[in-house]
Image 1 (cartoon, rainbow, N blue to C red):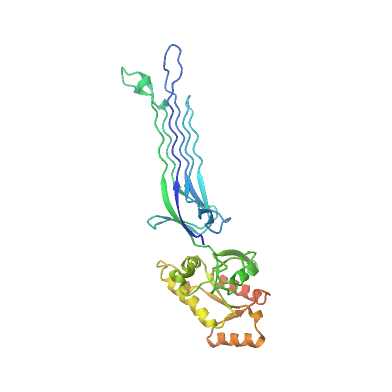
Image 2 (image 1 turned 180 degrees about the vertical axis):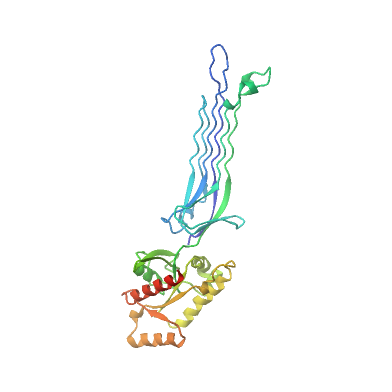
Length: 340
């Protein structure tokens, strides 16, 4: 799971100014003509929809922009150092070591200056004959140019909270990944084994002229809000979603125990969300009974009757064979339209 990393960034140092003199016939030194050094490269972080995780920063933690080049003779200015652009997924928060949020990059191509490059040093061309003290040789006064300034160096944390309209939640093996693959063009890793999904997957659902981004949140277990099974890392991705699709497996021996686990973890994690933000428990929820293809008609009726007993509206579906998916998409669109 790579959605929380700490990295070091250094902007480029400025290039040194140059010390040189023009040639004048009959004189050992003409006017100072050393050029300025180039400024060091700046360091930016840029959001791109081409990424959905912070995997590029799993192993490489230190980054540097290019230094500016030194100045040259005949007032030649050194080239500016190349800027550094680090790409992250939209939805990435950039935080200082103190925890203060510098910026929340939520739009494609949005960028933020993180570290400023050092200024290039001045060449001795800036020294004019009129500024040279009396009785001092020009070569002695102006033979030294300025060194370049140091680029800024920062340590920051990148924290990803996915930008999705809809979050698919449920215990492990409830069929969320298969459902995502059927509702969108996403191709998540799918297996019958629990904990196959170890990082959120994104897909875009197109239905009746609408376009919504769906996120498959890895299966949650009891204690997820406290970090068990990496649950607290997964739950942060639900913070930005507007709608939750709660997926329950028809194979479960205790449907409502599974439902209670998820609702409890959403409630517990919501206590960690800063005041003013919507609680996960308050988000509109669409309940889904998945894998109905494994049930007989009587078994299905029995399970649906249990939902009615607890006054829970549920949409029965089979991600595998496609039953009920049209009705589910209709419901998601209906809820999204009400939210505006």
